[in-house]
Length: 298
Figure 1: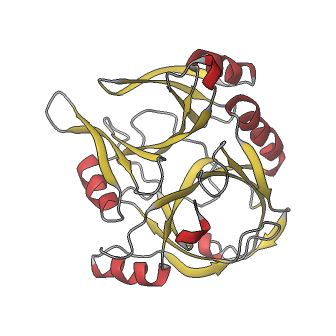
Figure 2: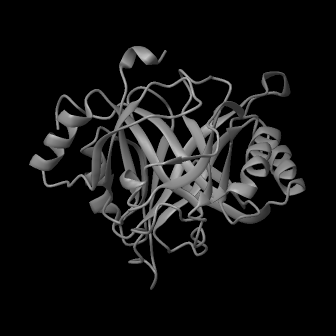
Protein backbone atom coordinates (compact mmCIF):
# COMPACT_ATOMS: atom_id res chain seq x y z
CA UNK A 1 0.00 0.00 0.00
CA UNK A 2 1.12 3.56 -0.64
CA UNK A 3 -1.29 6.48 -0.25
CA UNK A 4 -3.94 5.00 2.03
CA UNK A 5 -1.97 3.74 4.97
CA UNK A 6 -3.59 3.91 8.37
CA UNK A 7 -1.89 6.64 10.38
CA UNK A 8 -3.81 7.03 13.64
CA UNK A 9 -5.19 4.65 16.26
CA UNK A 10 -8.85 5.66 16.79
CA UNK A 11 -10.40 3.31 19.33
CA UNK A 12 -10.57 -0.14 20.84
CA UNK A 13 -13.95 -1.66 21.68
CA UNK A 14 -14.83 -3.26 25.02
CA UNK A 15 -18.02 -5.35 24.84
CA UNK A 16 -20.13 -5.81 27.95
CA UNK A 17 -23.74 -6.42 28.91
CA UNK A 18 -25.89 -3.29 28.95
CA UNK A 19 -26.35 -3.81 32.70
CA UNK A 20 -22.56 -3.54 33.20
CA UNK A 21 -22.03 -0.44 31.07
CA UNK A 22 -22.17 2.17 33.84
CA UNK A 23 -20.01 0.12 36.22
CA UNK A 24 -17.40 -0.52 33.53
CA UNK A 25 -17.23 3.15 32.55
CA UNK A 26 -16.95 4.19 36.21
CA UNK A 27 -14.05 1.76 36.80
CA UNK A 28 -11.95 3.30 34.03
CA UNK A 29 -12.85 6.82 35.12
CA UNK A 30 -12.08 6.20 38.80
CA UNK A 31 -8.88 4.15 38.61
CA UNK A 32 -7.34 5.22 35.29
CA UNK A 33 -8.48 8.84 34.81
CA UNK A 34 -10.39 8.31 31.59
CA UNK A 35 -13.29 10.67 30.89
CA UNK A 36 -16.53 9.82 29.11
CA UNK A 37 -16.90 12.53 26.45
CA UNK A 38 -19.63 10.99 24.28
CA UNK A 39 -22.38 8.48 24.87
CA UNK A 40 -25.00 7.12 22.52
CA UNK A 41 -28.45 6.24 23.87
CA UNK A 42 -29.62 2.64 23.93
CA UNK A 43 -31.07 2.28 20.45
CA UNK A 44 -31.74 -0.19 17.67
CA UNK A 45 -29.39 -0.10 14.68
CA UNK A 46 -28.49 -2.10 11.60
CA UNK A 47 -26.20 -4.97 12.59
CA UNK A 48 -25.07 -5.89 9.08
CA UNK A 49 -21.60 -4.34 9.37
CA UNK A 50 -20.91 -6.49 12.45
CA UNK A 51 -22.20 -9.65 10.83
CA UNK A 52 -25.78 -9.78 12.13
CA UNK A 53 -28.77 -10.43 9.88
CA UNK A 54 -31.20 -8.68 12.22
CA UNK A 55 -31.04 -5.32 14.03
CA UNK A 56 -28.97 -4.96 17.19
CA UNK A 57 -29.67 -2.89 20.29
CA UNK A 58 -26.84 -1.35 22.28
CA UNK A 59 -25.39 1.79 23.83
CA UNK A 60 -21.79 3.01 23.58
CA UNK A 61 -19.70 5.27 25.79
CA UNK A 62 -16.49 6.82 24.41
CA UNK A 63 -13.77 7.41 27.00
CA UNK A 64 -10.59 9.46 26.45
CA UNK A 65 -7.47 10.19 28.45
CA UNK A 66 -6.27 13.71 29.29
CA UNK A 67 -5.27 14.43 25.70
CA UNK A 68 -8.94 14.64 24.72
CA UNK A 69 -10.98 13.44 21.74
CA UNK A 70 -8.92 15.14 19.04
CA UNK A 71 -5.63 13.65 20.22
CA UNK A 72 -6.29 10.59 22.38
CA UNK A 73 -7.52 7.26 21.05
CA UNK A 74 -10.83 6.23 22.61
CA UNK A 75 -11.98 3.30 24.65
CA UNK A 76 -15.41 2.50 23.23
CA UNK A 77 -17.40 0.62 25.87
CA UNK A 78 -20.35 -0.98 24.07
CA UNK A 79 -23.17 -2.26 26.24
CA UNK A 80 -25.15 -4.95 24.42
CA UNK A 81 -28.88 -5.36 24.98
CA UNK A 82 -29.90 -7.42 21.92
CA UNK A 83 -28.28 -9.81 21.31
CA UNK A 84 -26.68 -10.21 24.72
CA UNK A 85 -22.93 -10.61 25.11
CA UNK A 86 -21.60 -14.15 24.85
CA UNK A 87 -18.37 -16.03 25.52
CA UNK A 88 -15.44 -14.82 27.58
CA UNK A 89 -12.16 -12.92 27.12
CA UNK A 90 -9.01 -15.00 26.49
CA UNK A 91 -8.15 -16.65 29.81
CA UNK A 92 -4.94 -18.52 28.95
CA UNK A 93 -1.73 -16.80 27.78
CA UNK A 94 -1.43 -18.96 24.64
CA UNK A 95 -4.93 -18.18 23.33
CA UNK A 96 -4.88 -15.93 20.27
CA UNK A 97 -6.81 -12.67 20.27
CA UNK A 98 -6.88 -9.33 22.06
CA UNK A 99 -5.71 -9.93 25.62
CA UNK A 100 -5.36 -6.52 27.25
CA UNK A 101 -5.70 -2.77 27.08
CA UNK A 102 -2.57 -1.03 28.33
CA UNK A 103 -2.07 2.19 30.30
CA UNK A 104 1.08 4.14 31.01
CA UNK A 105 0.78 5.37 34.59
CA UNK A 106 2.55 7.58 37.10
CA UNK A 107 2.64 5.00 39.91
CA UNK A 108 2.07 1.34 39.03
CA UNK A 109 1.49 0.19 42.61
CA UNK A 110 -0.99 2.96 43.37
CA UNK A 111 -2.98 2.40 40.20
CA UNK A 112 -2.91 -1.35 40.76
CA UNK A 113 -4.28 -0.89 44.28
CA UNK A 114 -7.05 1.33 42.94
CA UNK A 115 -8.07 -1.35 40.44
CA UNK A 116 -7.93 -4.05 43.11
CA UNK A 117 -10.32 -2.02 45.27
CA UNK A 118 -12.74 -1.99 42.32
CA UNK A 119 -12.75 -5.78 42.02
CA UNK A 120 -9.84 -6.41 39.64
CA UNK A 121 -7.38 -9.27 40.15
CA UNK A 122 -3.59 -9.11 39.84
CA UNK A 123 -2.30 -11.92 37.63
CA UNK A 124 1.43 -11.19 37.52
CA UNK A 125 4.09 -9.47 35.47
CA UNK A 126 4.83 -9.51 31.77
CA UNK A 127 8.28 -8.72 30.38
CA UNK A 128 7.89 -7.98 26.65
CA UNK A 129 11.54 -6.91 26.39
CA UNK A 130 14.63 -6.47 28.58
CA UNK A 131 13.80 -2.85 29.47
CA UNK A 132 10.12 -3.11 30.34
CA UNK A 133 8.06 -4.80 33.05
CA UNK A 134 4.27 -4.68 32.90
CA UNK A 135 1.86 -5.32 35.78
CA UNK A 136 -1.06 -7.41 34.50
CA UNK A 137 -4.57 -7.44 35.95
CA UNK A 138 -7.99 -8.71 34.99
CA UNK A 139 -11.13 -6.74 35.70
CA UNK A 140 -14.24 -8.38 37.20
CA UNK A 141 -15.37 -9.48 33.72
CA UNK A 142 -12.02 -11.10 32.92
CA UNK A 143 -10.74 -8.35 30.63
CA UNK A 144 -6.99 -7.74 30.76
CA UNK A 145 -5.49 -4.43 31.91
CA UNK A 146 -1.73 -3.76 31.59
CA UNK A 147 -0.01 -1.08 33.69
CA UNK A 148 3.29 0.37 32.47
CA UNK A 149 5.24 2.78 34.68
CA UNK A 150 5.95 6.24 33.26
CA UNK A 151 8.59 7.10 35.88
CA UNK A 152 7.20 10.55 36.61
CA UNK A 153 7.33 12.35 39.96
CA UNK A 154 4.15 12.75 42.00
CA UNK A 155 3.92 16.39 40.84
CA UNK A 156 3.52 15.21 37.25
CA UNK A 157 0.68 12.79 37.81
CA UNK A 158 -0.76 11.52 34.58
CA UNK A 159 -2.28 8.39 33.11
CA UNK A 160 -2.91 7.56 29.48
CA UNK A 161 -3.84 4.85 27.02
CA UNK A 162 -0.69 3.00 26.04
CA UNK A 163 -1.28 -0.11 23.94
CA UNK A 164 -3.44 -3.00 22.85
CA UNK A 165 -1.86 -6.43 23.45
CA UNK A 166 -2.68 -9.18 20.96
CA UNK A 167 -1.47 -12.79 21.06
CA UNK A 168 -0.77 -14.23 17.58
CA UNK A 169 -0.49 -17.79 16.32
CA UNK A 170 2.40 -16.79 14.02
CA UNK A 171 4.07 -13.51 14.90
CA UNK A 172 6.07 -13.33 11.65
CA UNK A 173 2.89 -13.52 9.58
CA UNK A 174 1.05 -10.99 11.76
CA UNK A 175 3.96 -8.54 11.64
CA UNK A 176 3.94 -8.51 7.84
CA UNK A 177 0.16 -8.16 7.79
CA UNK A 178 0.03 -5.12 10.10
CA UNK A 179 3.01 -3.46 8.43
CA UNK A 180 0.98 -3.32 5.22
CA UNK A 181 -1.36 -0.87 6.95
CA UNK A 182 1.36 1.50 8.09
CA UNK A 183 2.33 0.05 11.48
CA UNK A 184 6.09 0.36 12.02
CA UNK A 185 8.07 -1.89 14.36
CA UNK A 186 9.60 0.21 17.16
CA UNK A 187 10.80 -2.66 19.41
CA UNK A 188 11.16 -6.40 19.06
CA UNK A 189 12.35 -9.34 21.16
CA UNK A 190 13.29 -12.91 20.32
CA UNK A 191 12.84 -16.21 22.12
CA UNK A 192 15.46 -18.76 23.07
CA UNK A 193 15.27 -20.26 19.58
CA UNK A 194 15.94 -16.91 17.92
CA UNK A 195 12.44 -16.59 16.46
CA UNK A 196 10.41 -13.41 17.14
CA UNK A 197 8.68 -13.54 20.52
CA UNK A 198 7.05 -10.11 20.69
CA UNK A 199 6.96 -6.80 18.85
CA UNK A 200 5.75 -3.27 19.52
CA UNK A 201 4.23 -1.49 16.51
CA UNK A 202 3.21 2.14 16.13
CA UNK A 203 1.39 4.36 13.65
CA UNK A 204 2.71 7.73 12.55
CA UNK A 205 0.22 10.12 14.15
CA UNK A 206 -0.12 8.95 17.78
CA UNK A 207 1.55 6.82 20.42
CA UNK A 208 -1.09 4.14 21.02
CA UNK A 209 0.91 0.99 20.34
CA UNK A 210 0.04 -2.45 19.13
CA UNK A 211 1.86 -5.19 21.06
CA UNK A 212 1.99 -8.51 19.23
CA UNK A 213 3.04 -11.56 21.24
CA UNK A 214 3.83 -15.01 19.84
CA UNK A 215 1.57 -17.73 21.21
CA UNK A 216 2.88 -21.07 22.38
CA UNK A 217 1.07 -24.26 23.30
CA UNK A 218 -1.91 -26.25 22.15
CA UNK A 219 -4.38 -23.33 22.03
CA UNK A 220 -2.26 -21.25 19.66
CA UNK A 221 -4.55 -21.85 16.68
CA UNK A 222 -7.81 -20.95 18.42
CA UNK A 223 -9.56 -18.54 16.06
CA UNK A 224 -10.94 -15.16 17.10
CA UNK A 225 -13.44 -15.20 14.21
CA UNK A 226 -16.30 -15.02 16.73
CA UNK A 227 -19.54 -12.97 16.77
CA UNK A 228 -19.09 -9.25 17.36
CA UNK A 229 -21.00 -9.41 20.67
CA UNK A 230 -18.27 -11.48 22.32
CA UNK A 231 -17.50 -10.27 25.86
CA UNK A 232 -14.30 -8.30 26.29
CA UNK A 233 -11.87 -6.46 24.02
CA UNK A 234 -13.01 -7.47 20.59
CA UNK A 235 -12.11 -5.01 17.81
CA UNK A 236 -10.07 -1.89 17.19
CA UNK A 237 -9.98 0.87 14.60
CA UNK A 238 -7.56 3.14 12.76
CA UNK A 239 -8.01 6.16 10.51
CA UNK A 240 -7.63 6.12 6.75
CA UNK A 241 -8.11 9.01 4.34
CA UNK A 242 -10.42 7.04 2.02
CA UNK A 243 -11.99 3.72 2.97
CA UNK A 244 -13.06 2.99 -0.61
CA UNK A 245 -9.57 3.50 -2.00
CA UNK A 246 -7.99 1.63 0.92
CA UNK A 247 -10.32 -1.32 0.34
CA UNK A 248 -9.34 -1.44 -3.33
CA UNK A 249 -5.63 -1.40 -2.46
CA UNK A 250 -6.15 -4.13 0.13
CA UNK A 251 -7.89 -6.31 -2.43
CA UNK A 252 -4.94 -5.86 -4.79
CA UNK A 253 -2.62 -7.42 -2.20
CA UNK A 254 -4.96 -10.22 -1.21
CA UNK A 255 -6.56 -8.81 1.96
CA UNK A 256 -10.33 -9.21 1.82
CA UNK A 257 -12.75 -6.68 3.25
CA UNK A 258 -15.28 -8.79 5.17
CA UNK A 259 -17.83 -5.98 5.67
CA UNK A 260 -18.38 -2.55 4.14
CA UNK A 261 -17.53 0.01 3.08
CA UNK A 262 -20.68 1.19 4.89
CA UNK A 263 -21.75 4.57 6.22
CA UNK A 264 -22.72 4.45 9.89
CA UNK A 265 -24.44 7.20 11.91
CA UNK A 266 -23.55 7.39 15.63
CA UNK A 267 -26.76 8.64 17.19
CA UNK A 268 -26.40 10.90 20.21
CA UNK A 269 -22.77 11.85 19.52
CA UNK A 270 -21.16 14.87 17.89
CA UNK A 271 -19.46 12.71 15.27
CA UNK A 272 -20.57 12.85 11.63
CA UNK A 273 -21.69 9.70 9.83
CA UNK A 274 -18.60 7.52 9.35
CA UNK A 275 -17.61 5.33 6.43
CA UNK A 276 -16.23 2.05 7.78
CA UNK A 277 -14.83 -1.16 6.37
CA UNK A 278 -13.84 -4.24 8.36
CA UNK A 279 -11.06 -6.74 7.79
CA UNK A 280 -9.82 -9.63 9.93
CA UNK A 281 -6.16 -10.16 10.79
CA UNK A 282 -4.52 -13.59 10.24
CA UNK A 283 -6.04 -14.88 13.50
CA UNK A 284 -9.49 -13.43 12.90
CA UNK A 285 -9.21 -10.31 15.08
CA UNK A 286 -11.67 -7.70 13.84
CA UNK A 287 -9.99 -4.54 12.56
CA UNK A 288 -11.91 -1.45 11.40
CA UNK A 289 -10.77 1.10 8.84
CA UNK A 290 -12.57 4.38 9.51
CA UNK A 291 -12.61 7.29 7.06
CA UNK A 292 -11.95 10.59 8.83
CA UNK A 293 -10.14 13.71 7.59
CA UNK A 294 -6.76 14.48 9.12
CA UNK A 295 -8.08 17.95 10.01
CA UNK A 296 -10.39 16.35 12.62
CA UNK A 297 -7.32 15.75 14.83
CA UNK A 298 -4.63 17.86 16.45
